[in-house]
Image 1 (cartoon, one colour):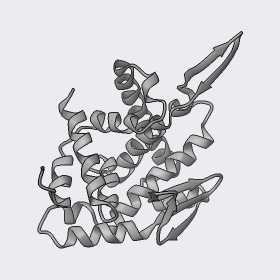
Image 2 (cartoon, helix red, strand yellow; image 1 turned 180 degrees about the horizontal axis):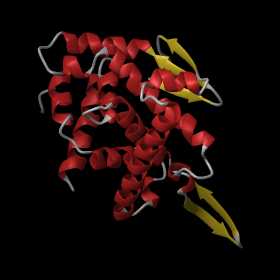
Image 3 (cartoon, one colour; image 1 turned 90 degrees about the horizontal axis):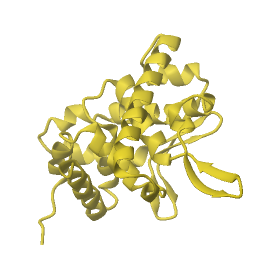
Length: 226
């Protein structure tokens, strides 16, 4: 039986995982993942990351700032802070509700910061409360940007065919691409040295450390398996 790792041990290891491996992690959580060949996934991941960075640069040019709070204000977004929210058995960390509301759950952030502060680690500098919240905010801003540019933005225009019957076709977007794009977007805006996907483990750990460690091991397997 494997010894359970501490949160700090896991995060320090995850800091070394590259963005493409995190992209594969995003695909592993997509309900349509089986419909995409492995080689195609890598191509899509790269395009989604490029899309996120491109729109971050466009946003900075348009609003004259990389500060996510200023950008949210310019976009006239209403930011609502809440303790926590549940969707079934899943804990929600942040959300975008069209057309103009972003919800940020503070309880998971406070719990994560408290855990990290008990350890002597560089993670204390990386994961300050304001940094985590800004990262989450940048991620949700991207989903607003997706809505505003849905006819041209890659994460919405890239679709897969679900079925084709007598000339009638049903195409679907991929949720994973939006998540990958959003992470690249917020990483660029916030100047992060790590993948924002790490927050999936960091924020979840206080609620279910066993499941958080399972995610950690899945990500490492994806990273080493390429």
